[in-house]
Length: 287
Image 1 (tube, one colour):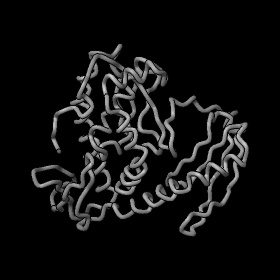
Image 2: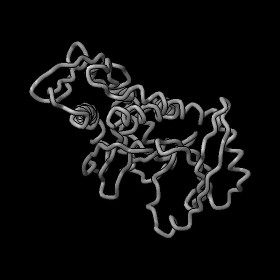
Image 3: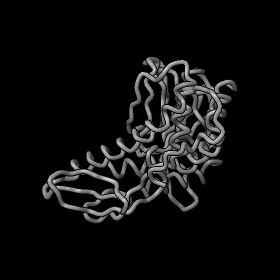
């Protein structure tokens, strides 16, 4: 429910800490990435291969052999489908991986296509996503452009001359304010058990990551998290904060996560099944 101050992740809390990064991929969870080196980029080999889906569609897959990759990865974004192969992986194993994950790929592409239906349309859009719900939306005229929440849902006020860029800025400002309100409620629960506080928290639109922890202690979070159920959003915050304790994904790190968010596995499954959809939805609303 909106405005609930309870912490979804905090059912069985004990003292702990943490940081993290993970990428939305086919089936796996990505550890904090190594900074890109120019030599690595130059050594990547790229080509394109067609893949036939069960519905008859042919998908153009960008195949990249990356010396930094440790396993075969399949990813989907607005830029297309990408298959990443480690240096020693065979082309046959890559093709087999594509076939085995063809149903998953089909579902991800459908989610991207359906996200276009959520594009913001002045005086037409009847709802907006927030915290795992679709809230009713009404349109109003006023002296400035802004979004606000009230007992009836959401109100989108626009001036007579407001264009799409102004409406997109107003919606982004609203989502950022709602996300910071959630973070502000959760952060005090975790700070006492951390070795240090994050230097700052940034909200940005990320293409594949959900969060990251920079060497200076800055936590970056994907803005689309505010569209997810609060428990999923809080899990990502916990994941990143725990990296302040362990800069890896070792068993000790996951024990810290478990202590703060006992249901973290359920939230990870949510991102695996719904992550691409909420990222695509936010991008459709803000473009």
